[in-house]
Length: 398
Image (cartoon, rainbow, N blue to C red):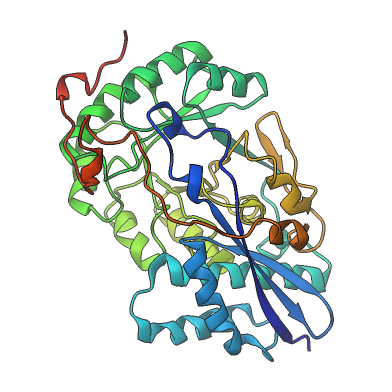
């Protein structure tokens, strides 16, 4: 019986992606604070599984190190039991949110990778087999030019983000790329918007027939979500900041969302994400994992998951990204014409470049985005703000 010999963390400072949806209005927090945390689990038979944990990588690293003693000597194949064991061990610390679930995600993903390596089959096959061999993805476009460049490369779905002039930018991009390209708009929830302002923006965007409107209000603002559902004729999406099945449950039970966006590095790993997909399917809700701040291991894990579930919609992707991303991981995952192929080699089909990671030690993992607040109020850094002056809130053309 293959047993766990060691659990190791590999934390690195990743540079910023080429742009995000936020770039049009300011500087995303990813510009200075993106850390990637990879976890490797070594067994007594010499196999090494790899996972990734997000949700505040520097803090998650500490959590993983604290959980290590619970895993060493345990059978590596007992994924569900080990997940439950770690969850119980964290219970005394309260609801640990994305930090606790980020640690579980890293370890859980590595265990799935190990099982695939040991059995000589892909993680997608272990999760039930493939329902699709290629996964559609979308990219961020802060401007008409970046949207046109993405479409020229075969991408068929674009996300516009930020708050300032978001309606005007979305209409301009739709006019530039045409009706065949799917569009999404991400309002990021607070700290930028009240529910009333979100409704106004959503109504202005309705003529664009968005694939979804993402986080018009914060994920835990149930009153706000009820208002969005009542007032807007748009599919609604959220979930990247949530960490557990319990957190997602009210959104499903009340029919408040059409798309769930669990983060592959924050949501407890493939074990919990597969359960969430089943819950979502029961409510006719689609799954479109968040990947904005994640590294390449979590992306590959998301591709395996989306291949195996029936209610997969689309995957977020940073493209273009920092050139170092390609150095972190050896994988046969490839993007072509807006689609990601599902690896068929054993496990996740990856090999981590620990030497490259060690050359980029973590220096900063917290930051505040710029460009989101009303003019002259950035120093207040409030979590909730009404838009002023409001007369420009829904402007759709110059």
